Figure 1 (cartoon, rainbow, N blue to C red):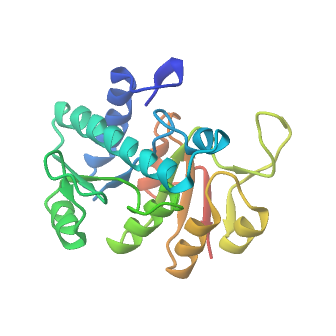
Figure 2 (cartoon, rainbow, N blue to C red):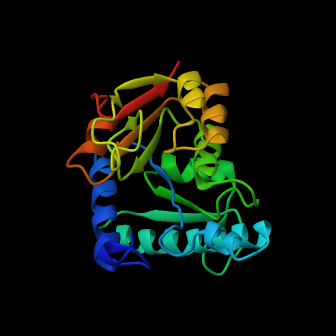
Length: 221
């Protein structure tokens, strides 16, 4: 949600993301969202300057909550009812994460935005997404990113890199795909949760995925 400057929260970009999510919400599907924090804080930068890993990760978790609140506000302004739940308890601004409460919100047509990652250092928001998706019984985990799938190499530096339409979990793990960490993929594999990697910014990509159309890369058995 950083916009052109690559840092911070751009309200216009938040509105754009909210609009894409609202479009699939109109299809009457239940939606849980896990947000990252790269637009505010990258733990790797802190680690490079000698910061303690747990401290850097906790700062990242707090940053995801800022993004969650911004996205919730943008969705509410578009007429979509949301609830923000956080793994780090801060009752003044959001609900604590409670699985059954999250599932009740979803059943009532509310979008639940999960902030704070898993609440533990050393775990990425990819793993948080896989964990929350498994807990709430999601049918699919969509990794909405800036690339339109999984490639054999970085498509920005290798123009002839091959894009895969489908991969097995083991293939994705063996390839050490950069778009999602191995812990998240393993958790999805252990729970038979399919993953779709797609370009969030491509027209109708989210809608196509929700409707079961071929888009991006499918990672499954």
